[in-house]
Amino acid sequence: TYGSQFNPDQALSRLEVLLGFAQGLNYSVTGSTETILAAYSDAAMIRTDVRSAIAALTERGIVVNYPHVQTLNAEKVATRAEVCALLYKALVST
Image 1 (tube, rainbow, N blue to C red):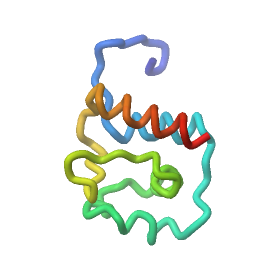
Image 2: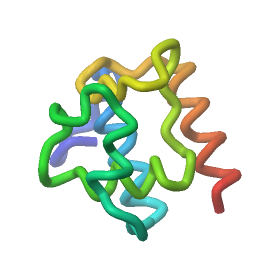
Image 3: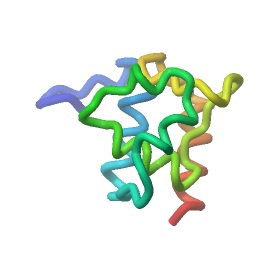
């Protein structure tokens, strides 16, 4: 749902999926955001307003990057497999 519209066929970026989990789990980062995000080769591409949320998920081992584990690819369209893997990791983190 975006606004008042329901778009079940709309593609979601990996960032949108990750932010959904971050908001739902309400995790906060306990370490240094920049140190945690340094694990990603494309960390500079992560928007400033979402860096702490992505760091919190990374810190808890929820973020799944395949096949390049050091690349977040935040703007890439999320596949069903990626969403399933993220969901599993989120469930076992609680």
